[in-house]
Image (cartoon, rainbow, N blue to C red; front, side):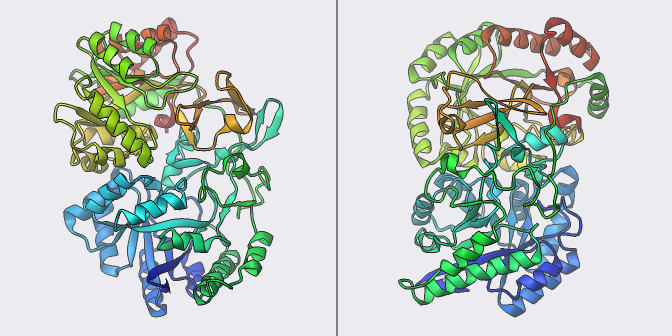
Length: 621
């Protein structure tokens, strides 16, 4: 293991299969990460990943060479996988890798319950982006976090100074335009979830913007070959090279270029030379290169066009997918989903509505909904709800519960701001819709009467992950909208405290890249991208994040009476107040008529709102 003064420096390399591993173990890396044939995010390509026996052989070989090994158990797990999880974790515990890399909170839960002897690292897909989240994971025994791709080195240094957590940081490779695990586009269109390692890369399609063909959602590859000293200074322990799908010749040479620069720097930190390695990286780049978010938001300069649309940067030599429109709700899908959900279930449900402005909130109260949730990620040019607004609503709400929500991403400044916000509003609100583990940990000491709902942005994919959040004091959890019908049924059959999203034009890509600023586009004017798949609207929220919206409204309205959930939710942010009233009335009518079939509901929607285009999204798969 390398060391600079008293600091551990681990060059972490990827291996896609055992043959590649045997080459990489001979390079100058300090550690290797790789995955088995199950529960890992790189399952989309044949001939890759390791059998159970190969996992064992790889660990033994790495041990002989003095290199650490990390096995990726980094997928979101479906119901059947959760059932097989204990057996797999027991096997991994027996073959003794240095650690495992985890995304799904279900894995943390099972390790804690069974006391498996495994060092746990939080995957980049956990989206660790604030100190409170690090503290929450420390309490669950996590030793290392792979920081969110949007984390700066300055923030990393802050985390290092205020925790005992080891930090891992992306150093080279393919990056994603969206925040970690906050893209559902591939799942909604194709049933292929990026959060389960099966992304079909819709972000890399070409789009027309105001008549100009471009790739505004495609980002450059990251390269920190000239900035390793800054990373060391930031307190990074592990320097991660992305590339489990890269070919052997390229990835082994790339690893050695980084190894040489590290060794030169450690030997002579003033006069070391990196220029030959920099030149090699540039000449052998797949896309163009950037330092991503290491030194701040890179903005429009991070958008890539080199080889986009040609497939040249993919090892397969072809694009993963072509522009594809969302599939509109139809009777064929309705029948298939209804058969999965089965008979209507008994029991009353509450109705929640997340709103973006005061007219929506007042309309929802007037319609007598059970709960209104005030959005934090309000779309511009609207303004965020002020304390005065919320106190006004508290006086008007009657029997309707009043919740505030937290922003989807919260740096430590946002955590501090919302802590003060909550202190001033604690007597006026009934609960909080919480977006991420850090916010849940930060606000864990709220009065017992203040309810907590975990939002879909937490990517709760199975009942065991729901148990993890119940154990931290949440009253309800919202499963991810990526669940196919069979998986959603299994989730609901094994949990009893859920709120399901049943309507909304949802965000499918959530980005720190500001497309409005890049194109000097007014925030009060629609920002529309076009290609053969149709139109794609982008909104910017009050925190400067961009949201690519679904083309149509996602819905589970026809199945409300079949859903074994305590609560259903309308996501109303894009709706005029009058349209919202109609959607609420439809929901209330369906919920009151417990003998209505999905076909009855579909017919009613088509009669009452004939211009409404609806999609079942990922549920239909």
